[in-house]
Image (tube, rainbow, N blue to C red; front, side, top):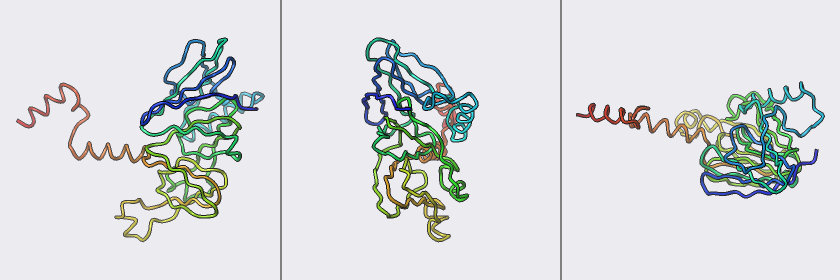
Length: 261
């Protein structure tokens, strides 16, 4: 199925929004809960499939939905369709600080493999599947588990990444990366892991026990602030300061006053 040709605009700098403009009858498929706002005339429906294969039966859609759950995504995808007679806009927001990347899958050609939870939305006709990691070590220590998301098609797709995004072009070389910093890579890239130096470096180097290795020919997209790292810093800081979950409330503030008096 040929993808719908959608127009878009990315708004903001740190907490970005992608605003998609739909012609009458056009549809954009999005991750459940990603919608921020939409104009009158756009209707949405939760579906098990991505709509890339209109002839796919119920059990095929059920199997694909089950595979999506393995990657940590929702069971359903939401289809937003413009049923009005004019152009209408619908917007989708990233769930944490970072960048929204607009990717023309027609130019990429061979498809794109992404980290779990990276997918935001795409033109109807985009095939949203999974890519299994066959090597056992990658599944346990590669930072993204045994499965990654796979996007294929000839239209626009949008993914999000934490912090700043760096694009690296490999031509037969190898890049060593923190396992959580990988956002996406094209099909010509081989994803593997290696130990982060000797035993002392692995235990006390602060870079984790393993590094991801990306080799081959293709494009790699990296993020400066993985969500896991952001969450770990928040938790560590909260534990260091001794603040409780109730500190922000009025009762929490009174408790701190009485404890310090």
